Amino acid sequence: MDYQNRAGANKGGGGVAGASETAVDRRERLRKLALETIDLAKDPYILRTHLGTLECRLCLTLHINEGSYLAHTQGKKHQTNLARRAARDNRDSMMTMAAAPSAPQVRKKVFVKIGRPGYKIIKIREPESQRMGLLFTISLPEIKSGERPRRRFMSAFEQKREVPNRAFQYMVLAAEPYETIAFAIPAKDMVDREEDPESVWEHWDNDEKVYSCQLLFK
Image 1 (cartoon, rainbow, N blue to C red):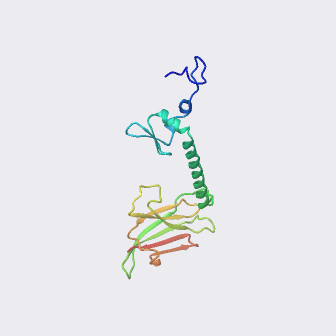
Image 2 (image 1 turned 90 degrees about the horizontal axis):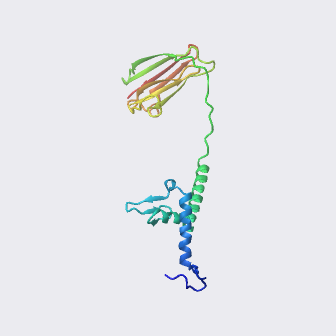
Image 3 (image 1 turned 120 degrees about the horizontal axis):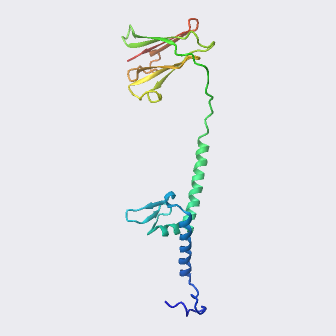
């Protein structure tokens, strides 16, 4: 192709470049700049297809090689979509923060523990219904003045000490300054405490410092 005899060209020059040649030159310069500054391994939007081509997952465009993809990332379409994605992510994060207010911080109580309390477990049978059950008697002679034992039931998947077993649940008892203790009891055989409140009975003897809890099963 003769570039010397173009209109407006000097002798020995390349002539005046057309619009298409200017665009090609611009894309080539952008491609070289992108190759120097962008690490494709860290680009979250690039996808290599089984045909060896590259796909931009943000703009849904196909490219034959890395140079073509990099030139695309510097273009107006990709940059506009990046700005839209950033604005949408920022809006979503603000809505999430507004919808989920931060939970109040609960300060963990710290005290010197004196060990585990003494306890006794007895199997019992209710005279009328002949239901089997367990009676827990826990001695707490050194319990803090004014403190009352706190009991709750915990599923096997809440605790982190043992491998979870859905056949069991735990009765947990806490009383300062003693260590918190837990007893594994059958989960599926226990009477529903909401349907039958009498299936769980407890008593705190403040004079003898003895806590008693009785459980009845189906």
